[in-house]
Image (cartoon, rainbow, N blue to C red):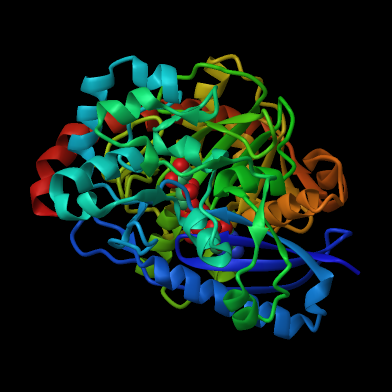
Amino acid sequence: MKYVIGIDLGTGSVKALLVDQEGKVRCESSRSYPLLHEQPGFSEQEPEAWVDQTVECLRALVRESGVEPKEIEGISFSGQMHGLVLLDEQGNVLRPAILWNDTRTTAQCRAIESKLGPKLYQITKNAALEGFTLPKIIWVQEHEPEVWGKAAVFLLPKDYLRYRLTGKLHMDISDAAGTLLLDVMRKQWSREICDTFGIDMSLCPPLAESLDFVGCLLPEIASRTGLAPDTKVYAGGADNACGAVGAGILRKGDALCSIGTSGVILSYEDREKDFTGNIHFFNHSQPDGYYAMGVTLAAGYSLDWLKKTIAAGESYEDFLSKVSEAPAGAGGLLFTPYLVGERTPHADSVIRGSFIGLDGSQRREHLVRAVMEGITFSLHESVELFRGAGVEVGKIVSIGGGAKNDVWLQMQADIFQAPVVKLNNEQGPALGAAMLAAVGCGWFDSIAECADRFVGYDRQFEPDPKRAAVYRDLFGIYQSIYTSTRDLNRRLQAYR
Ligand SMILES: Nc1ncnc2c1ncn2[C@@H]1O[C@H](COP(=O)(O)OP(=O)(O)O)[C@@H](O)[C@H]1O
Ligand SMILES: O=C(CO)[C@@H](O)[C@H](O)COP(=O)(O)O
């Protein structure tokens, strides 16, 4: 039997999957690493921790699977997007990586908008948001000129990991799309944007397609992990592109709802398309494909927060067991999931969450239901932006924590007013990465052919007309909470 490995370098942990030619997961392994919050709004990580924990993960995978290393043909990657890793001439890391959920760069975003005007959108197809890479580069230029002076190249998290595993410098296009330095339609670095911000083109690494072969493992990495040195390494993709690959989102009309720590609504696009309301438009890992995506920053994070706050130590199953006893609309209680600010449709790092409509008759299950509904309403704002732009949102594949609970899956169908389906063996972006390796190794002619073998669907949830009508009414009230609480949150900011 032959195998491939898919590695997902997430924000909290790295996960590696060993997958056979039928798409069966033979073994999996995961290791976590810390987030560093040196100041409010800062979110950083030590790139060395990614490398150490990935090596540990791979060593465990090889040892525990009992598979012969020479049977493992290829490796590919998925990774948290946007994080800035700066290297000097010798390839040494110059400072901790500044991550996608770091919000220090509001001033730099405004500067990008005023210097580039409409060109920003024409070239990058995206808006200037704190999470993206270019504002982080400008922040380093302004606040750490001595670091910037030594910078020879910038990378994204999984591209740095791949560099350390192979010694080869590349950035894959699906991830480069999230830097605000890529001409998304031409798939090349934008000289105009680089020149505007004093970024020498030599700082931009060579670009690769997700399926490209980029090299083999360094001998030192092979001996530390137990893998064979001639294991082939393929470029890989952004975690959302790989999540889409792993869920079979590969054709026009395919849509994905992913509720992890953050939440994403993603629609496959086969050509250039204009969106409003902070919908991102990125290159897919599928050659010549794209995807549009709206992001709720605190999706599963909001439910985790409530669980930690009122039910610490309980399992998710117990915590959610009574949710169906509360009616749709949670007895008039609405929640906005802005615990760390928001991205879509409101790019706002100052806004914070609310419970509106608390009533003495409400019980714990009303609060839990309101939080699940609020997260789903927030994602529905993206669904509506897609529909407003003429995208036909038909069936939505649901993945992540939000797909582990049937009440939540039904709620998604009722709020999105679309059928929602779950996968029969969901493995998230790591499976997408493994699929890129499988296609790279030549096991399949295309990602779609691989998906036919590797991706299977389970139960489908249809919208219930009565609940869908309740949610349609409540959605209007939900949407007005943002405008009603924006100014209040600006005034409260000083007290945080
Ligand atoms: N059994 C469950 N039912 C519903 N939601 C869950 C369950 N388990 C986890 N979650 C939610 O899903 C989120 C984690 O999803 P996951 O896909 O594992 O996240 P990530 O990709 O960010 O690591 C948690 O924040 C939690 O809110
Ligand atoms: O910022 C984005 C996408 O634009 C996030 O989706 C990151 O890519 C983080 O991924 P997780 O580690 O939460 O899966």
